[in-house]
Image (tube, rainbow over all chains, first blue to last red; front, side, top):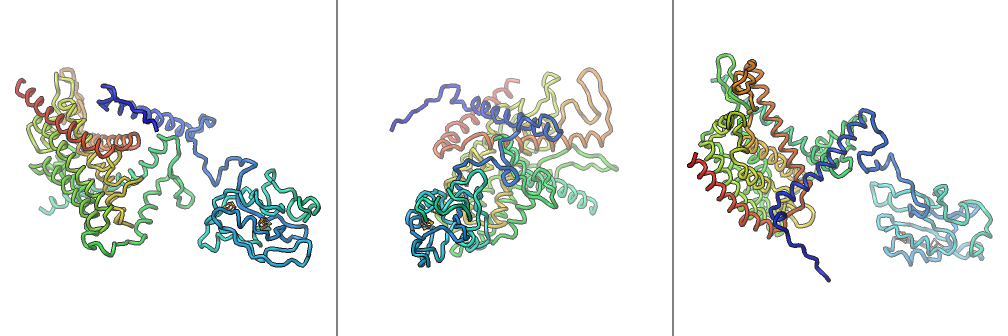
Length: 191
Length: 359
Ligand code: SF4
Ligand code: SF4
């Protein structure tokens, strides 16, 4: 490790001038921003921003197409989740927040289905590994929604029934199949 | 007799009403000012019936939050002292204002009302003494919490406060020498003179070095950035870690009140108190040229508002410093206090003495 030192010059070691310089920088920002805040109140120069803040719930920045938001499960044309309970997402999840109970599906070609599927978003770190791991085009994080606050842990447990109803954000859809419709053959594994 | 009591109570109501309201508004101003300085917007969400008025409801929302929060006393700690400490912090900060004159003597209906709550003849000593008592709140808070980190925080605080108290006291000596009195009222009156007939003989003119030393030491006494080692909310654990609810709020408000007290003392000692240059009891005057007479009541009103404005200016300035400078390291803090401030304060006294002797 190389430590880069800086010995104070005589003028700097008085602190006083450096402090005055620092105060001038912050005051300059204060005066500039205050001028435009007041101008905005009077309806002048609306195009010059006085702050970089985005007032979040009212204003939103456009999301990237690859933004990882709340999870959703893609549905088959009959509305049941495409998930085949392969447990890949549960295994890959670094914080172990996905809990799946598998059951036998009546269709022998599908083999398994999730009896229950829960994502505990209090623990999720939004890494997106579950989305990448899913082999059957089922789990996606393209809803464009942030997790909402809840009053209990129960509120923050997203279940299969809820996840399958979520829709992708228009323009950001990453799944091959639109939820609930589309030819089954488009599924990479033909499921 | 009865009237005297009423007048005194009225003065107390006015002064403490001003101080406490400004303290609440400072908590708002601190958020807003820092936000504007950093190109942000700052707290603006608290609303009543859809009105936000620039976030001015936040101090009220904060108070409601603090009052309704759980008030927790550490079971191993000393409940009585734990409760006493925040009150002490508030009290010592607030009581300083009792001796600060906020206006000239008011002549009304044949009465002379000094606009100062208590005209103590030990003025400055009273301020220093109560500034010193402020240590107790810090030390008791850390000690009674029965938490070793709080205790360490309060030890840091005590060491810092004692070091800077010395520089603070020594820098005041310069003012006392310059005006020849330790009564604040006399000092403020002394600042009504003029050097060479035109420059008001304010403390800053008489004691420029003393002012810088006093202001720095006083900022250290308020325990705020760049001297916030006692509390250091961002990483080291401070002395009021074990406080919650309104007791924490008392420390928090105490700090703002301390800011106002320091602003008041600085105004009284170095910035002419209620004096306005070229405004005397007779009215506006330009020395040697002319005088415009003004009614007595208007003059007093102008002077009281001048005092208020000066205090507000220094509050604003201290917030500016707080949001500009980073914190000292502890060894730098001690070295700065003992090796820089104290010797300079002593030099200041010697130079003041020499000047007094020569002229
Ligand atoms: S995004 Fe990451 S943390 Fe969240 S459920 Fe998927 S794998 Fe787990
Ligand atoms: S990886 Fe996909 S198919 Fe496998 S359990 Fe998870 S969601 Fe279901």
